[in-house]
Image (cartoon, rainbow over the protein chains, first blue to last red):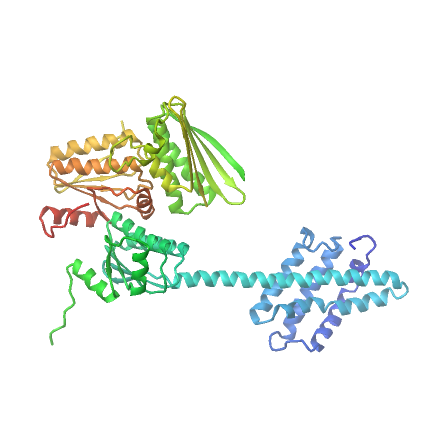
Length: 287
Length: 133
Length: 126
């Protein structure tokens, strides 16, 4: 039911906005779900006033109940800010939606008082206002949802970066300790960033340590080999360390040829080789 | 799947090959390819554009930006040259050995997702390559 | 006609390729470089490709040719500054640049030439 003509809601909300606010406030403060620990009364009043104002304005401009349309854009923005602010201090999506839904009661009271003489019309208006506030309340849960998704994406990115640090072990020696599961896409990204780091630091030797890698499949093994080949083309050498017996078996079974690659059991062994190549050795200090 | 944009470039000289590389680079960036994928498709285009000049006597390349459901770049190289008698052989010939025609076809094929070649002696050559995002 | 400049650095020659070369320019470079090596009796050739975004089979062949001709003239060639995207593409292409030594930068390239000339580590190239 979306007949915009004849709805008295815009007119009444505009006329009684000043009374609606205290009624609504009283309502919220007395409710069992009021979270005084998360929101002070003056903050609640500010949020309520802001929403009521943009609610009234949007209705007055005749935008009806098309909540997702351009006419309600400003109202959506206000709700978005309120929802985000609430999410930040710890409100659940339901609690924020309830904030919107709680406007129903004072609004119904208002409609009832003004339209007591016309029960049929009142019924229609009650339905309209309920549907409208339902949509707005649901919108706030969507805002929450999107916020969560953004956090997850950002954390995934951070985890990816944390788990693939390229370390400068020594002048001219880089180490890339790989940890966790390697899938084809991630391996590609990691390998490309290793090559970029080689250029940036001018390091002639890179140790790729796969001690922390559980399994290696053909694609990953191929990416590793391609990276070693690419580094060599660029003028740097790679050493692969940390190949555990199981992985060594897998690689042989897969028919991957490691003949052209230096491999060492441990990162320490690889470091020794790298230092030797640079003409360096570790010696104990005398006295 | 839709072609959202297309353009035809003439390839008659070495300078045109450079122009094709630059155009393909721009289009690859437009389609949203990362740096490595850009480089691969530009390198493939360079090989094929050169073939058009050296063995095809000049020709054209049509660039097509694809979308729906995946984004991609398709390049169609055409010439009215003598055509290739033994396509299989041409694909196998290595430029590393420096022997044979050194067509770079095999190399280009490795750099793209889809590769098709139509060629017959006296009927010219058309090579179509596609790289998906 | 445009030419790529060739600089002398001690007893080596340095070429820095800054432009996307068309084939004729590449051939001219090959000829110029060979002539210059003979002329100056250079012992080393450094080719800086750090500005090249694409190295295809033609350029790869050019680099290989230069290295081969330089060797005949008793000079060592080192290609420096290859970009990661180029290296990855060459690996995919199956192009290995036989006979061409590579180094990450000019400094390392010079060191490599020095070591090869003075037989310091007896490392083989390619």
